[in-house]
Image 1 (cartoon, helix red, strand yellow):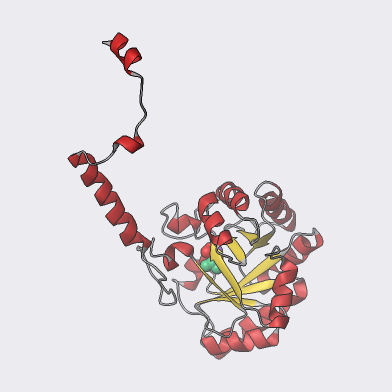
Image 2: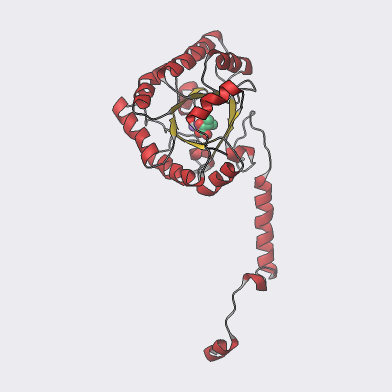
Length: 276
Ligand code: KIV
Ligand code: NA
């Protein structure tokens, strides 16, 4: 299969190909997702919660993101790798934003970056696109704003919020983003936004009318149980499989069942005799 690029995102919308995206934070997971044919891998700042054990995404640093993006990029051959810009890495100034995004590309080997927000970040988006860094937008529930939003809640339920979100999607498109994540947005609003712009929408908790879907891999594989949002579909339960395997391992060690001869290395008897 040929590489999935930002151009493929655009083409997909015209051709009705629904884009599949998942998160990854390490080499071996990225390799599995890539080999399974996922179109794009997001190194999300959800890293903070599912990998680093933080309560939210606010403690994730640019260094964390670069470190994990590098690992993912090594494992992805076909999928487009997108690195999330962490909290405060694109808020201080346009100059700092370009430098920080540039590090995700140059040191992290990401193909593109993602940042949260609408009209507030337009100058940053425009500058990044001018610097030849592809940008993905993110509207609706933007977890880096958790302290302003007062929790992780569905966004765009009232007229003012919904209108603002539609306008923000158009403004982001004008500023040059190649796609927009819609998180925790009512399905019919996500549909309206999807129909209002030419670039693809990637939904998470935003219903079936988006041009693609994204989920946190640990959620959909059943590996992260601290909190499971309503929009998650668990495709398997790796958590149970891991617990069973680890318990069996402990038991077999106790019982002397593991390791067996085939797992061990031999020394010749002559050499061995000389050691006694
Ligand atoms: O950090 C993340 O995983 C994300 C997705 C949920 C869109 O931003
Ligand atoms: Na994120």
